[in-house]
Image: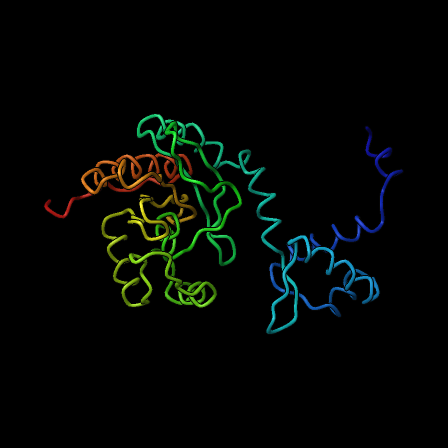
Amino acid sequence: MAKSDHRRYNINSIDRALNLLELLAKDGEAIGVTDLSRRLDLDKSMIYRLLSTLAIRGYVEQDQATRKYKLGLKVVELAGMKLSTVEMFSVARPLLKGLVKRTGETVHMAMLVQLDIICLDKEEGPAILNIKGGIGDKYPPHAAAIGKAIIAYLPEEQLRVILEKHGMPRYTSKTITSVDALKRHLRAVREKGYAVNDEETYLGVRSIAAPVRDRKGEVVASLGLSGTAQRISREKIETLAKAVIEVADRVSAELGHYSSPRISATG
């Protein structure tokens, strides 16, 4: 159908809602109703109706302190379904498949979106008992390996804001719930180059993740595998971690990042 034909079927309310979403995305910050009304040239009652509908579906969120609106996670979820066409995910996809084949475990990629760790790609492992969770799911930053592999490299202030939003809920007896303990743990993550979730979100489940860097050397994502604690035994963690780091480094290299050779603590 030609573009001119599409215009014949244009629905004003949908058009206005999309204009509102595009404005929120372009601005990048929360915007109040009055400002939205002025910038979109719509009366406040219309803006309220649009925001209410979008909020119910999760496309916008209201900041309870300022009463302003910003994009919601539903937008991220939809974007995640399309991200296979984005450079990082298209170069990573065959490498994720290779890691699944090599380890037999389910592999995930995640990014920090606003203040949330979101799973944006996944390759299922062949095991009968596999780990749930998929594209668009949120993971706890302080407990999930793919979360810790990202927040370990954040500035102190950004880490503080994330922890203030999410808190540090206890999922199992092994969950880290102290900020000081988490900071020590994240220091070890940076030293080793990988993060481990040792039954911290679910008893009987372990995960290993490593950071993915862009050409500037900044951590832009994490890549990890998950499986049962029986399959990912403590004795296997180091070997599996090397495989995860190798794939994360290869994705990073595809993005233009070239790191110096890793030097072990023993030299």
